[in-house]
Amino acid sequence: MAEFVEEPFPPPGVDLDHPSVARVYDYLLGGTANWIIDRQFADKALATLPILGSIARANRLFLHRAVRHLVGLGVTQFVDIGSGVPTMGHAHQVADEITPGETRVAYIDYEPVAVAHSEDLLKEHGDPSRHVAIHADMRDPDRLWEKIRDTGVIDLDKPVGLLLIAVLHVQQPPAEDSGTTDDLGPSLVAHYRDLLRSGSYLALSHLTDDGVPPEFDDKLARLVTMYEQSSNPVLCRSHSEIAELFGDFTMVEPGLTWTPLWHPENTGAGALTVEFATPNESACLAGVARKDE
Image (tube, rainbow, N blue to C red; front, side, top):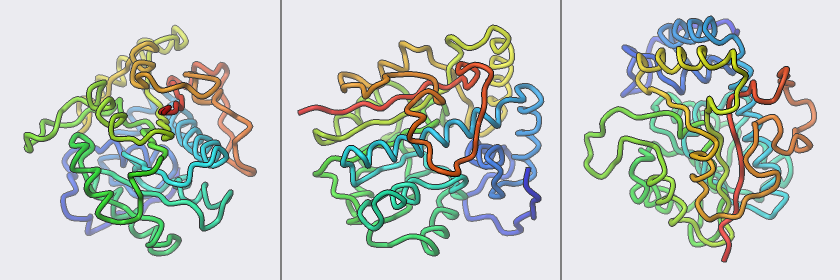
């Protein structure tokens, strides 16, 4: 892992009494936007499931491959919900490698650290006319959609690529605002599918204990129990439950599969290599689907 310097002044609203899933994920990817409480939790999680860092990196690489593939299909706008800290490359950086200056991206997260770091990245390496970071709660889709529309960066009356990467297995604390829901599940995803225009795509990945190697069963169960101590508990869904999140959208080949198996040919040159003994060690299913006319 990287060498860390403790940040004396975290952004307003940061909870340093509990580990944050977003900051733990950043640590697992080798980032530095995390605090001692996050690193201590992550190290315990790694002791339980040593391959967890590889699982996190495989998810990030799936995001990169999904963006590359969708740009190749003509997608020029992306909405990345639960975008996290910009570790291992953000969506706009991947898109600009293929079509420089032609794509637009809105990043949305509820974690203040993730939003602050995304804003810093965009100031240095972004284009304010094409890229924006938004602090919003994904449990309130209509309000979130309003915030995106208000920026003028994304034209929501046209197709977009909606990215829900490794976010739907993260559960939220009880919401103070009655307009939100607590479970990031089927009804919430269905609402987002309804908001999308025809020709849009939904890309998502999700933690699962369905079909993983037998020796992972107990380890994943202990990991889920550990995450109950964090500010955002996690849950596993089955293959069929994850497939249902796509609704009646048309799946892009090869359908719902393990993260390393989704269009590996779209892995960028010089990308970090993540190896598993078998693809199901990645413990995350991933897919992309299109909203037809």
